[in-house]
Image (cartoon, rainbow, N blue to C red; front, side):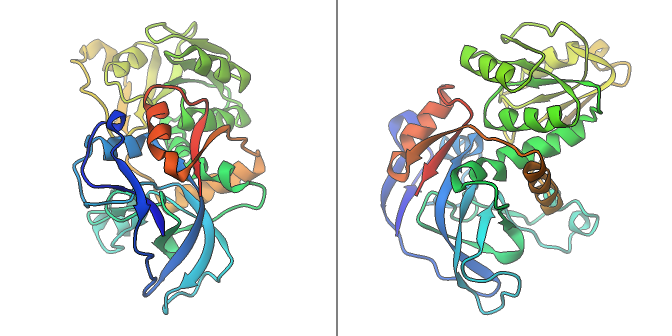
Length: 331
């Protein structure tokens, strides 16, 4: 099969992904083999490829927002059939027995594995996944529009829940890429007023088009105090800015898997029961809940399409804020 392989972490400007042939995988046990049609390009892919996340597999096929059709079944599958359209997300497998899994917090599983990082992912014609860790894709979404929902959408949805902002409240979104442009659609559907802070003028315009009450540049303070905020940009200094913009009792949720160091925080910014918390991965329940809400709204992802062999170009565009919405590889 054709695939993009990463032999060793390197800056994306050096074009580290090699497009070529790789063995076609075979499903075993409860695995399904998915013929990939589209795969989203995520900032987490950048962190894997550039080594900001320590390597776990080498070589590895990145990508964890893969949409396609089940082609082959392992001999222990019970849930899916050949021809089913599914999505393969970041969370590849959990142990099911650790204290976190038993408590319904499988996103914190001690032995979790992750697609496109610990196991090969969706920058390829085929990918494997356990059948109970894939999602059925709602009929209303084309493959290319469904792909960004599988990480940008799900992690944004979990971050929104953990921000604690309720109907009628004010939410700040720091960074306005793939996750934020989906999250704002859920927030507006829930009656939340959104304030977007992002350095790129095109992204500020997109935020306004999607219903933001205000969009400002990095460093600007929103014109009203926020009930909660989500930081999607991997810039630790934004935690300080978001805390300054927060009302008493509000929460800043850090929606990324990697972030530059957060500067020292004056206690006065945390006082009055303000909360600074991370968002780690997601549970399958998050994914199922989000996809149901996404179909009800319905979410309209904006995507820029690239062929599989142009994965390096897509990653460069993402790194340099040149993608409006989400980048998707068509396979």
